[in-house]
Image 1: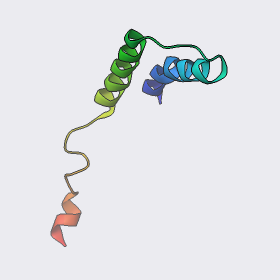
Image 2: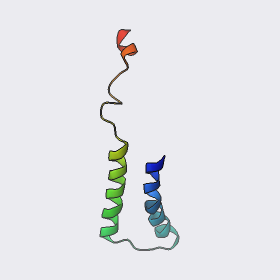
Image 3: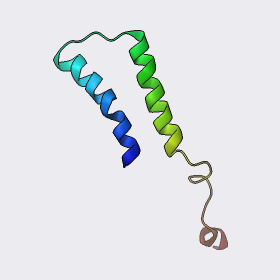
Image 4: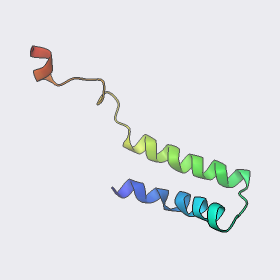
Length: 59
């Protein structure tokens, strides 16, 4: 749950774009893309989805 707190600024930016019609520069978009990418990389565990449990292999 704690890594998702990194998305707070992203939702703040989205909210300011919707409610205050704030313009967003390319550097801000790049920064938020890097934040989301870092979140995905921190949560991604290679092999967890593809690798079946040993009990499933026995059947």
